[in-house]
Structure formats: structure tokens, C-alpha cells
Image (cartoon, rainbow, N blue to C red; front, side, top):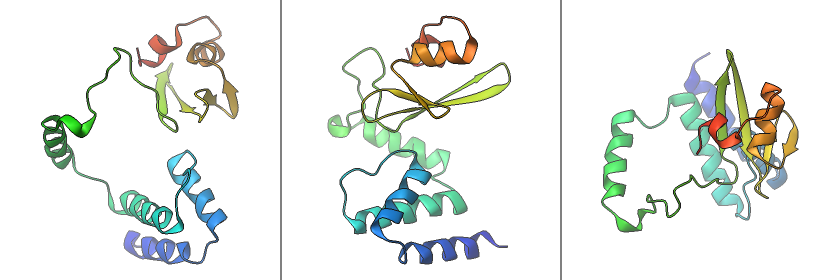
Length: 143
């Protein structure tokens, strides 16, 4: 079936969902809670995400143009004040190790969710994956 037809069906279904169902769909698509937001905003974000999934996201050349524009704007918040990378709620950290892909999600309280369990640190997740002690930030490449 054509991707556009599938997309149109999914988009039309969003209007029939309750607010709770829309928030669940948001979590499924983005991997984190939508937080405090009105229904109109949640629907717009769901529409955009589904379009990205079915029709493709922004091209790499457009991404570079936007990056250059943002780098020229002091208000773009691109510069880190801390040398380490800041961990943002809902961000996914992906690591390939020994031929397998591992994904960790940063939770609202700053912990790390992996394989359905929540860990206090990236080191604890790295230990779980490897069976040996690792500096979690080094293992995941976020240091």
C-alpha cells in the first residue's frame, strides 16, 4: 500500500483519539512524555512526526543550512556551558557493541531506562550490558 495512503489514514485517526490516547501515541512515537501541552499542540507534533516517518525528514543539506543559521544566532543555545554533553529528558543514547544495538532513554528524573529497567547511572547500564565495570559516559560516547 502507498505510504501516502497509510499516512492519510493515520492522520485522520488522530482526531478520533482521546487526549489520553494522543499522549500515549506521542510517547510511542517520541519515546518520552509530552509534558504539559494542549491538545492542539500535541496533534500538530503527532502530525509532523508521522509525516517525517512516512514521507521522510529534513534533508541533510537543509539540516546543514539550518545549522549555519543557528550558529550565527547567539540566541540559538548551541554552545554548551559545560564541557560535558547535557542530558535531556527523553533523549535516546544508542550504542552498538559486539554486533548488537543497545538503546537507553533518559527519564524525567535524570535516570536511564534500558530494557524496561531504570538505572541510576550510565555506568550501571554499561555494567549490565557488558558484565564488567565501565565508565558509562565513555562506553556510550557521551563524555
